[in-house]
Length: 72
Image (tube, rainbow, N blue to C red; front, side, top):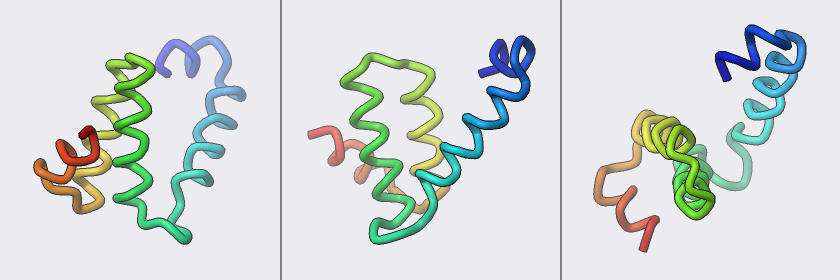
């Protein structure tokens, strides 16, 4: 994301807005959305994505046990 921000700040800002809209609380809690994103990040082998979504899931109230359970 840092490289995108440097090379194409407009595209970076649009992507950030899209992510914020997708991850906003709705029928699913943010914690649940982030746990789903952790699992998807693992399945796509996106290590930076895993780190971001685990951190965000924890910030949204997920426990370490909840993160592990989402992966099983």
